[in-house]
Image (cartoon, rainbow, N blue to C red; front, side, top):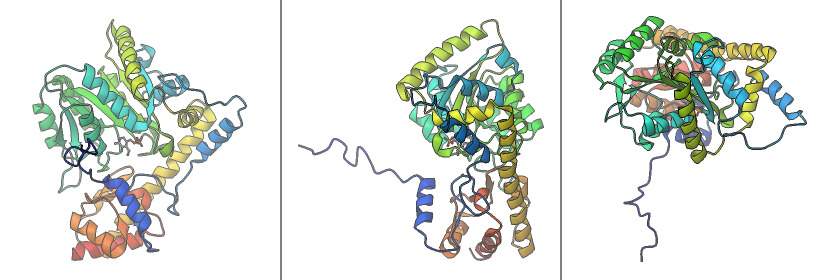
Length: 414
Ligand SMILES: Cc1ncc(COP(=O)(O)O)c(C=O)c1O
């Protein structure tokens, strides 16, 4: 008798997650010069994780609340959190909120929100037989896994222009234009991961027109609101514009980066329907099915991170402090972009480096080749993903020059 039903031909060894594997390799490296530019988590100027001052304040308030307990949250999560999340991503006076055309569930961070949305679409979105989801090329790699796990086929649309290291808008438009009507178009709301390249407002308007003409379904993934520019309204502009235009759409919202609540897994999924006399009944039916999906997957979401975010989002003073904290993080990253570009230009490193300051958010797509990335790791103990992405948050005034010199060497030699 076979000793297992799960032999290697049935359950082959899966590759290690590239990003978490990179983090483990960094931890094993004993060089005092090592630089971690892999995982997308904010670091302060001493390369240390940063607890936002406002999060500390909210945490203190919560911990000293004698009524705090550890009961289950409702299936849809903490109501004050989901409503504040609506206000943050849209605006309190958005007609989608005032007309009750939106329903929201608290999720296991942004990943859980993308998953819940994908699962809902896989069960209920049937505009054509294919129901293909389109991701930007490149995208956050988990998009592929999440959508394929729920049985939705996917393709990609061109996004990054290799020469300009900016947006390949023409390629993006052509593919979305030729996609089958009713396709799901996954869009990064701001601070695109991994490229740091976002469409301009004019380009978003054109995309909205095209998506409407082709009856596609927009699915916004927003993991960096406020973190990108330091301004929560500016970073939500694209989503707010699409909602203003009356689209039916989904939004997956993460609080990992903008609150530094990575491990607390605070996130929110929103479904917005178009204005119509039936809108409230649509939302009520959708909400009832989302609740069933959520119940079977996680029963109810984790409480603590959402409580912290909710405290901040619902308190005027704490909100103002949060906006300051966002400026601290986004400001330091912008400074590091300037410093890195400046150093590379000073060194006369072959190539153009203007994209470093033109890209936005946590990541920069440097244009370094896989060979150069390998050489950086071997000779300079610099850890970054093979596609040439660096997490800008890993740079600081102590290591930016070291990194620039390492890049200079790799570009000249590799
Ligand atoms: C584009 C994008 N979507 C979603 C997420 C979800 O992250 P989390 O599940 O930690 O909120 C991330 C995090 O890196 C991301 O970059």
